[in-house]
Length: 314
Image (cartoon, rainbow, N blue to C red):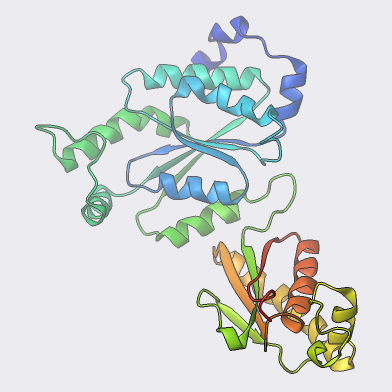
């Protein structure tokens, strides 16, 4: 199959410019395939969280066009491409050979990840989801459809760069496997996304919070007349909040603590954590600490979102 791929005539018919090649050649291209119910959708979601451009159900003939999307300014920040391909067409192997040859002519080395699981496990997963297998039809039950798919995909399995048996994996286990093996693109990207919420205790603690910090021990700008109408985004307010040695030490230790904690969550495959920081009204102390924490985490390459939930109410 490798020889056929390298000698396919389409490569000569569709030359690729050097500019096109230089823009995409350094980015990884993954083709995700395997048995239905083995975890393809989960893997694609993991790659999406790793900031790759992803798409599922892509006919092999369209794969080069999908890769060329990396030249588009709106997606050029993507770290690569991960494509799940549709094998239900009878001619899919020939189309896959052609697509791989065209990608090679663009200077790209694709990696094929093949996912499989024991047929008994796949049947149990389908019983849980109650979804039909794509090859089930009149006269062909689930077990026979799985066997047929295994036979149909055998040539793809043979050329795969990595075969992953997910029989014993939970969704979280599979996520960790993919992250540990392939989260090494041009720059080290943190997978976990950090949501920071400042709030006022008198309005209620955010129900979605995973971790809550009570900041009511810090100096309160509310009692300083000039600072009362301002918010924690104001430098003068933040300076007041951190004016005492205990405040400065707390900020340092909080940043150090999260610098220790977040990589542990990241390593476990956690993709989101919500941290709520509260003071009395949610206008001064919680906002100041949240803003300082946001800046510190961004310097550590975390993706951070901020919501000042009660700032206008405090």
